[in-house]
Image (cartoon, rainbow, N blue to C red; front, side, top):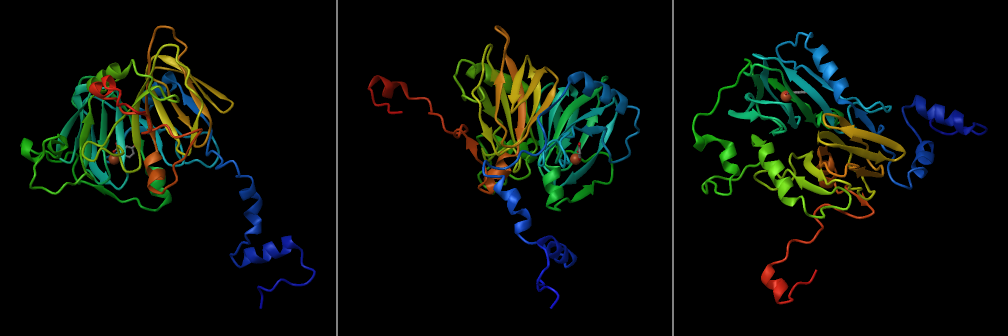
Length: 369
Ligand code: GTQ
Ligand code: FE2
């Protein structure tokens, strides 16, 4: 029997022997496991891509002739070893479309979203037959299997951030991809047919609820107004006034694998340090500040993009005495939560604060918090 360990054989020789049989003993990685008593090692490093660098790369990319299906897009690649994306789960990048250009219709099992950097009413993405305008800082979701094509019918360049779960789908070998066959998908004609009409609080009662393939635009006008409404709140000790882009039908995560947030850091705010098993990618919408991640210091201002790897302690600082800072972010937390893996230290901060009390209850002293 060739698998029997021979007398006098060293452990290294035995390991080699097992290797020849395409086997590996647990003792070979036990030492690695023992190093992980403080939780997972972060994948990749904290990193920031400055606005100027991204703008130059976008400019240079315009000389590349994109083919029929390809987009003029680059991905922010984490400089840390072994990360094939911005984080092990998320690919964040930027895309540019020239006036008159169309990025052809296709669909895929990958979930994706667009956060608009330089938009216009005449820049739009068609999603499952609905035309969604891409104005500055709007968020457009293209959930798995929705048909989507991007159109620039404006007279200036259209630029947006793409965030996709492609590294997860690739790792799990779950990528399906289907070109539509021509550049532009047909559009729906009547309001009654719009899937986005099902996202209203008044909906057709005769239909089953289906929340998997909804085309949706979160207009920045509304998001910024909401940030203004909540600006006086304490918010989260770790994130300030942070608003969730709730799924328009289910109220749950923005996409099955990705949650999006808009957060306002009031002037002078320094958040408390925390860490979580999710990794986060950020785009700076307004203002400037600093995010401390482990021993790294990321100094950011509007137009910069940065990444916080999983399980690294971090805090945000808005040094300005007078100017608000606003960050857009996306995390893989829903993916981890679905598997029971999401963890936060020193304590949970999402969905845990008290709900506003009813004034009459306060007057009557009925309020217990
Ligand atoms: O715009 O549909 O960066 O399908 C990668 C894959 C963008 C897109 C990417 C895509 C798209
Ligand atoms: Fe796509």
